[in-house]
Amino acid sequence: MTDRNVPNTGVTLSPDGPHAALKGGGRALNGSAPSDGSVAPGGRVAPISAWPGEPVPLLAGEVFVRAAPARHDAEPALFVHGLGGSAANWTDLMDLLRQPDALGPGTAGMAGEAIDLPGFGFSPPPPDGDYSLAARAEAVIELIERRSNWPVHLIGNSMGGAISTRIAARRPELVRTLTLISPALPDLRPRLLPARLALVSAPGIGRMVIDHFRQLPPERRTEMSVRDLYADPSRMEPERRAEAIAELIRRDDLGYATEVQLNSGRALVAEYVRRGPGSLWWDAARVSAPTLVIHGSHDRLVNPSTAGRAARTFKWCRVVVLSGVGHVAMMERPDLVAAEMRGFLATAEAIATNDSAGAVQPGR
Image (tube, one colour):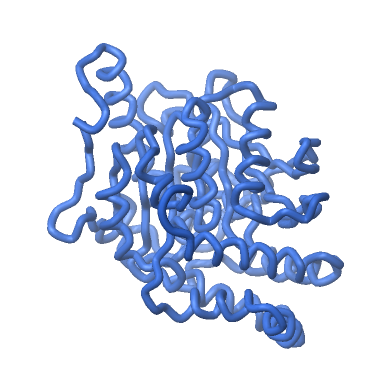
């Protein structure tokens, strides 16, 4: 049975979700308290610090992995960030999902880990210089196998969504469910920011553009990025903005940051023009895990109209477009994403139970 929830437009449009009264804060008020126990003005919960992490040695090179504490019987989950992001992008969503009852009454929540892909966050660049999507997928696969707790709930944003799609298609035994937030699946229709990515990825031009961009003050560059990624930049807490500026300054001092950005962008552009067997949409059609696809209606990077194609392509798929949300819904409105995931996972569990009893067959 395929649960697509797709009326005329091919998607379910969520006008504001179950936490419509929560404006500006981003985190649901029933989330855990911040590490210092403080409460910001207006009664909202102040942002918590990024979850602690540690380097994990892999054959593909060392990666840095952050983990949110959870109950011993919580369900394993792995979060994969997008181009230019890091494991810290998932801080608030991981907090909401790790809570008991987060996945439904009586559930233990998620034991979430978030990876810094090679070259991003605190992970060094790959020793072999391979920035292809295939190489990044292999690094994530190796981490999952090393943890020996699969199948996992696999959650990816943007480029991380493309990587997660490839993993779910080619190593289905590792993936329990798949959640994609604005996944970077190929779409060649004209769009400003993807065109900018293609320009930056062009040989001889990209480095010049990045070097020019780096001449701007970190505060200005951060503001430009927030406006690209958020539908409503005011939803980014001052603490989160300060964290983003500090991270940008840190990466400016890394000798490899420009190479990572250039090569990662080129690898993503290469996937966008790939056709036929081996392409990302070819992979999507072969994903057997129940899949949730979340788009933001005001996404400037990934066209939310691709939600319709996702609904037609993935076998077991629920597709939702969040109104008034941008490219990083898990950062801009983690409360809405958590609520959508809760409903999806309850349905996915019912599908799995019925399927194991022989009542439901994939694709029927």
